[in-house]
Image (cartoon, rainbow over all chains, first blue to last red; front, side):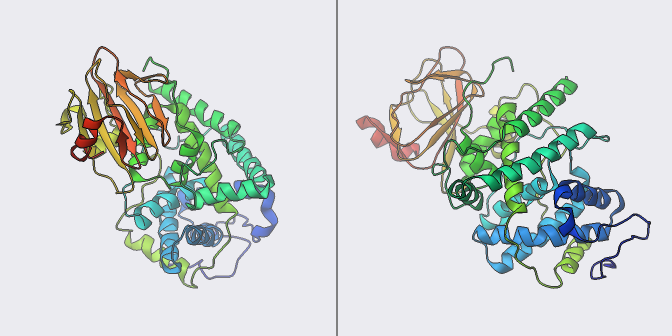
Length: 205
Length: 222
């Protein structure tokens, strides 16, 4: 059942598609790469692709949760739950609205609230905008590029400021302790999502 | 909605919501607001990208050797409690409903399902069950009525769902949210016309300026 799991990395899958072997070499195309993996999980239930996603994201989810005050055991459990959800819900991932890391982050966050805090997480009213059958290629590419730029911008923030942002996400700051102006360059991503919302509302009319 | 929302969430609140660190009571208010406000919904989405970036650059902590296999067995047996995935494509929101969906989930229906309790001066309230760190209530204030002058120890957020109110600072209509930090004293008055329905969340007890309201405080549970 878990044929590809512990197998050494191979360059070709049975289907003949070329498989990138070393994740370290693809830094610049990270976003495109994770996207291609999740598409293979979604369309082909590709365990090898899932294994690559798992090896990359699961240790980060675990790290994130432990930074947020979770025990080793719980963080491990949650990381597995989150990745299982990634497999089960891959069909709901919409590359025109989120990067893979963003999507996984939101799943982990929701799980964290459910488990660590034993609370309900009120969900905003759902919009009927599951992934469209043919996500707009241009939108998708633009958004993934924004994602790369945002990561770079966060990395370039003065250390103190960057730490404050991280602390906010790890739950070390309450909302009243978060700076009113975070200085994060979010304008482009926000406008892009805003436009997508407008388009959706228009289609619904 | 023809009215253009003028009073939005602050970036700090949006960031805390996106990070998942707000108390449940505030979470509910934010979820209700962004159900009515695409501007803030987009801002939340943008902050989720920050979360993604932080996750991506987070220190890795190795899982146990059989973690992937364990994950596959979870997948095969089917996780019992499902994690909510953002943007599940269903929407049953009725155009005419006053309460946005997340509020309806707590109330168990729209406005007619709310169990109101009188709190004096014609004002009615219904406290919604959330975790203890903060409280959230629905308020129904008849047009022209006043909510007793009060300050607060912590943050108070008020979201207008129907009607309108004004206080010393501004006027607030359906969809608008007012965020008052500690030690702000204000006297909200519902504008003439239909009842003003608000959702108000506080993370500490309100303190009232007058003598009588202070006595009423334990009964109001605010």
